[in-house]
Structure formats: C-alpha cells, structure tokens
Image (cartoon, rainbow, N blue to C red; front, side, top):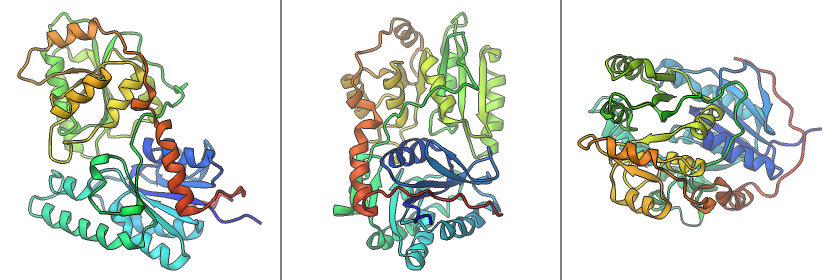
Length: 384
C-alpha cells in the first residue's frame, strides 16, 4: 500500500517545469528523499508523468485573462484533494484560499512561496484596468496577511521581501539563484555569435530597451540577436514582431517562444552559448532592490550582461563583475567594445549558485513537512 505524497507544488500562472518551482525546489526536495509532485501548465503530455524523480500533473495552457484561468483553481483543488499530500506549496496568492480549504479538509501543512511582492506588482500591472489595480493590490495583501497564521512557512525569493508579511520564525530566504540544467538534445545553440534576451517578454523586463541597444550598434556589427521568452499578452507579441520588422537588420533577429513557453533547458543552452546577455529592466517600484535571476544565470555562465544603470546593481557589478551598464541615451559602441574584450571573472559559486540555497530549503521542508518518507506514489489517471 502506498503512503501519502509528501509535497505537492501548485501553480496557476507558471508552467509545471518552471525554473524555481520544478528545477530548483521540487527536484531538490525529491533528491532529499521526499515524494514530490507539481501541478501546473504543461502541453507536453495530457497524462501525468515522472521527470527527475518528480511527478508532474499537467494542466492546459491558458491566457492570463481568459475564462479558463478562473476555473483552474477548481481543477487544482480537485487534483490536490485526490493527491492528499502532507504539504502543499502555493506559488501565487490566488491559491491561498484553495490552500486554506485543503488545510481544513486534509490537515495538510502549507508553504507560501513568494516569488515577488504581488500587491506591489498588481498596483502597476498594465494588463488590469487602472481603476482596478489599487483594489486588487489591497485585497491581495489582506489575503496574504489573513492567511499567514495558517501557513507553516513563507519562503521569499528576495531579501527585500523578508519584512513584507512579518512572518517571524516562519520566514525563510530561498534566493532564486542559478541552477544548471543539462543542455537539451533537441536544441543546439547557433554557431554564429549572438546577443541574448531571455525571460518574460515585457517592456518592464526590458524588451524595448534591448531592441534599442541592438539598433544603436554600428551597422556592420557582426552579431545576431535572439529573443527567447514568453508573453501572455498577444498585443505585446504583435508589437514585438512589428518592431523587429522595422529594426536594423531584421533578418538577424530570431524570436523563440513568444506566445509559447520556452523550456528552461533550452534557455540554459542559449545562455551558455551567447556572446552577451541583455537585462535592461525598467526600474519600476516592483523591480527596484531586486537581484533578478538573470543576473545569476549570466554570472554562472561567465557571460557578460548589459544591465540598466542602478546604484544597487552597480554595486553588485563591482563585487561580481557582472557586465556593463547602459541606457538608451548613451552610445552602444563602448559597451560593444567592452563585450568584445570581455574575459570571464574567476568563478565564485557563492555569488550565484542555487546549491548555496539548498540547506535553507531543506531546513524549511523538514520543519514543515517532517522527515522524508520513501514510498512509491501512484500516478493518478488523468481526468478533465
């Protein structure tokens, strides 16, 4: 007879094989001896499957504002009740009510993994009407604070989030550092030199300034540009395609993903092979003070990153030799010359490696879940 599943990660907006959720947390917990599952968006299979010791229960993809999104919590609840895990990890605030229901019905412990300051992000989110943003922001913060007393732990991806909920002994800092994934056999990095933009395709994440940097390079610069990422907003992808068509040498710009998720193994392969990365974030309130995961990724690969001038990031660069700062009102050629002369600094894994965060994750997990068990967990038959 099989025993109870130890840990189940639940996510609505993220893909099941999300870098932080699957590759970092779930895989690390599985390697500790826990029985782990992830329920999230995945179009690679319609039935549950096992990968890296973690069972994945796929949900269909949907757009951020689609009707399907608002029914997904019910599907997650149904799946979670069938799995009956000892603990559930909730990866967005809209799952907190679902978690409270699971706690009442199953007695499970709850972990809230705070990827970002969600209320602050909602207060500036362009995909919601302006009149709705402050109301959503206030409601989500109240929900987080109300749920706190029922949570076994809160894990934070950034040090600047630690004081948000005043979680006390329940608070754990589990930074979103870089975890190397084996290169995919389905995709090889191009032979030609290329600049690389990765991650969410959004103006705030720097997609327009990345194109501005490309267009500011001298016409005879021998470099391509690869944009590998995803946007849930079709209007942004449409505008991106139009801007690419009107850019300098549009035939040397390649878009990977766009309206579909790009597997993290493919992103990792591209980072390892690029000439330099582009991390030209807009310094919105919900960006300021953060050390984006992209910084860790390019440090680990020994590739320079072009980033937005910022006092905190300049200090981080002075410590780690991350790369070069640039803004659209500056010429691009000095940065390009620096990239060409770049020599990777000696590796200091403590600056960027996910492995340095695993002891904290292990302590958190054992405190909330208890010691690992070693049962065989059955894969439930898929039902819609």
